[in-house]
Image (cartoon, rainbow over all chains, first blue to last red; front, side, top):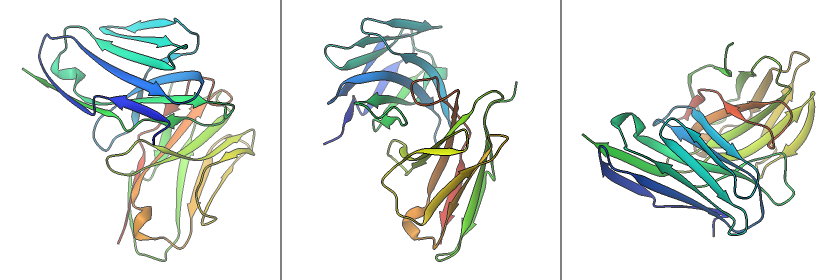
Length: 112
Length: 113
C-alpha cells in the first residue's frame, strides 16, 4: 500500500463551490507539502506545514496539518477555473529527511 | 529572482543511449534533489545532493547517477536507457534538505523509443 494516500483521486466541482482534498500518512509526518501541477509541467509550491495543528492560507486555499491523525487537508473556497489541475501532497516521513514521498495526486476540474 | 531552471525541456532518445539532464537551483540554495514522475503517478525520489555530497539515493538502478557542482547546479545521468525510463524528470531546490521549502523546476520530458 501507499505510504501517502490522497483522496479523492479526482473531483469535478461547479465554479464557486468549496472543496476539500485529504492526504493521509501511514507513518509519522515531519513535514507536509502541498503542490499544484498542470499536466506535464513542474510542481508549483503552495504550502509547507510542519507543526501539529498548523494552518496556512494562500489566497483561497487553506491547508491544515493534524499530526495525531497523520493527516492533512487542503480546502479551496469558492473554486475558480484557475484552480483546476493536479494537487499533490508530499511528505517527509519517518527519519528520512532527505526526500519527499508523494501521493498519487488529486485531479481537480472546475466547471464554469 | 529566477526560479529553478532545467534543461533541456524535451528530449527523445533511443534505447541503449545515454542522457544528461541539467538543473540550476534558486540562488542561495545548496541542495538539489531529483525526482522521476511517470504519467499518472506522484514523483519518485532519485537523489539528493547537498554541498556537492550525495545525501540520499532512492530505489533506482546504478544506471542512474548524479553530481553537484561548486556553483550548486546539478546533472542527472542515465545510461543504457530503457523504454521504462520515459518520464518527466524534476529537479527540486532547497536551502538544505526536505525539511526546508522545496521548489521544483519545470521538468525535462524524456521519451525513450
